[in-house]
Structure formats: C-alpha cells, structure tokens
Length: 448
Ligand SMILES: Cc1ncc(COP(=O)(O)O)c(C=O)c1O
Image (cartoon, rainbow, N blue to C red; front, top):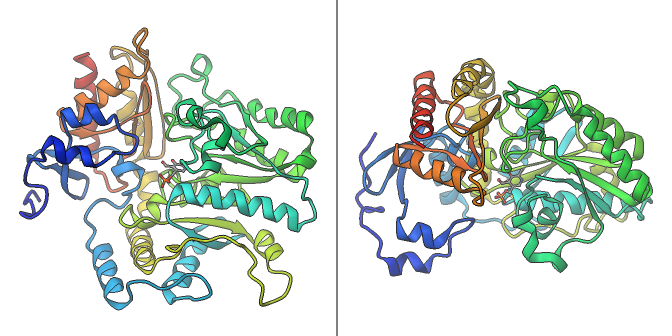
C-alpha cells in the first residue's frame, strides 16, 4: 500500500507551523530545521509526507506489536465510539472494561488477576507505586515507605517513575520534586564480561544481592517495593543476566518487599511470552504495562496485581472507596475496544509464539553486524536487539543519534538510546524484512 490519503499530511508545514508544537523527547530545533514527518502506516511500514516508504524497526515506539493499520482494531474503535463515546469510570462501569480486564488476566502470570486501567506507561508506574505503598499500610506495615529502582531504569516521566528511574538526563532538572526515600540498585550492564551475549548474559546474577546491601542500609521494615524492567528497554536493551531476576524475587520475598515488573515494553509478546515474567519464570507481585495493550492505537495502560494485594484493599465498610486513585480516562470505552481487538489478534495469529519461532533468525541477523566500525556490543532477546557503539570523544550520544538519522535517510526507523541503536520491530515482521533492516543498518555503519 502506498496510496496517500489526500487530506492528510500532503502539504509541507511552514517553520511557523512547526514551532507551535513543542515536541516531546525531541531535539526541537534540530527537527524543525529538517523535519521527519510521517503520514500513514500499514503492516511493517510507514510512509513519509514526501512519499518515502520506511521500514518500521521499532514498532512505532515499542508498541505496534501486531503491525500497523489493523482493520480489526480501527473498526472496533469506530463501533465503540459510535455506541458510547465516554462512560464515567468512577462509580460506574461498562462491559468492555470488565471484558478487557478478564482477557488481560487470562494471559497474565497465574495469581496476578486484578487489573487497574490507566492511560499510559507512566501512569501505570505511578499507580503501581501508590498501590504498593497503600498495601503495606493496609497490612499494618506503614513504616514501609521506601521505594527502590535501578540505575539505567526507565519508568516513564511522572514524578514517581522519574524518581525511580535511573537516567540522569531525565532526573537532574527536577531535584526537589523527586519522591523522597528512593534508592537504586546498580544496573546489570557489563560490557567487559557480557559483550555480544546472545539471549541472557552469563554474568551478573550477583548484582541482585545489592538489594541485601540496601536492606542492610535502610532496614527491610522501611522498604515497600522494588521496581525493575525485566529487560531495560529505553536505556538500550539490557537483558537480565541468568539468575538475576530469580535472585531479586527471592530477596523481595524474604524481606516482605513487593516486586514490581515494569513490562511497558516487554509486555504483550516482545520476548516470546505474553509477559517477560512468564518468559523468565519469575512472578512479580505487580506488573505495569501499556503500549502493546492496544497495539499503540489508543493510549492505555494497566496495572496487574496479585490477589493478595487486591484482597487487602477489599476491607472496611462496603460503601467506602478502597483506592483514592483513578483517571477520567481510566478504562475509556474506545481504549477498551482497541485493547479487546488487539488481544484477539495476538491470540488468533499466535503472535507471541511467532516471536519464539523467528527469534533465532533475528539473533543471527543482528549479530552479523559484529565487527563493523564503531560497534562494541550487540545483544538480543525475543524480537528486540541493540547495537552499542564506541562514543565519539567529547560527544556522547552523537554516534547513536547520527546513526538514527542516516538510517532514516536509508529507509528504516530505528531508535537511538545514547550511543546505542535499539530495534524492536512489529511481531509480524518477515525474514526478508529482517534482512532489509539489518542490511540497511550494515550499510549505515560501514559508511561511518
Ligand atoms: C519500561 C517503561 N516504563 C514506562 C514507560 C512510560 O510509558 P509512557 O510513555 O506510555 O508513559 C516506558 C516508555 O517507553 C517504558 O519503556
């Protein structure tokens, strides 16, 4: 498909028009000097406003898992909007919210069977943190107020997630607004020992013991929860070392600390299982998710909690609100319709299994880039991979950004995470399209 809808994005935007939109996580002045405008999308492709076809190597932003332009989703969304544009989520319900919660529960790890809907990954994280804190109070452990994140973690941009995250550029401007009582585990990235790992790296399980050190420092009775991404995505695809997540689980259980997996990227098939929790055989107490829940089509996120947590809230007078938290657009009917249609596609097309089937091909393809100029590491899991570069002296991040720009000029969309290129294509990508993605990356890297 390359027909461009005539009424959409066909004209060039003036510089003045570009200025009105303050773009998120974007080098605004750089972009507006040479804009990259997308006009439409289908399957594993975008088309630019000036008619170029772009192979989508990142599923939009790690979210369009079933590929672009899925009619099943747009039709479900249109029908839902026609039937009921909005329903108040507080003290009222609508069937699609309950249906979607049950569908999510069915594919979630056993025991995680209550779903709270939000509108983004950031909201899912801040919601999970609030649930964790109130849960500890309800259990009579109100002293457990401390929250533990991890260096190089990304948990969105709300104040809780920003505080728990471990990316300096995302944190440094907001010092006093950061949530107090937060500490961080060390990250697990170790190029000296684990460079060019295929799948889970061998070295680093012992880094989970740092939680024991933090318990020694603060005392377990002061710690409510630990939050980690099973695979850290935004800081460049950091796959957990073998045994690391298991060890973290053991220590959290031992010390009465809740374990939260932020599965905003890893949820809905990216690893080859519905959730990374199942893939790695480690069950957290809470999962946060978003993105792939609606195939990126309508903003939506969710917090999935284990029964004990939900049950702890369901006490007190029956007429009392149990959790003073929620959003006007929690479980929005349009988003629920998109979510239901999306989960049906995943199931019907066996897309999670498809990841397992194609992952070995993907692994071989990405590792074929070893030895190209500037490359210092390649790593992968499921349908996600990263290529890491030696930074240019005095200009950290420049090589990663330049690679992203050149790749786009060559017709592929990848993601720059500092001096790392991350790739996470739609789960429907074919082998010949993987070849195109990797060959183009090779061409870009050779031309450096
Ligand atoms: C692990 C993780 N958590 C949270 C978020 C934030 O999600 P959102 O951008 O939908 O707020 C992201 C976004 O990439 C993410 O990767």
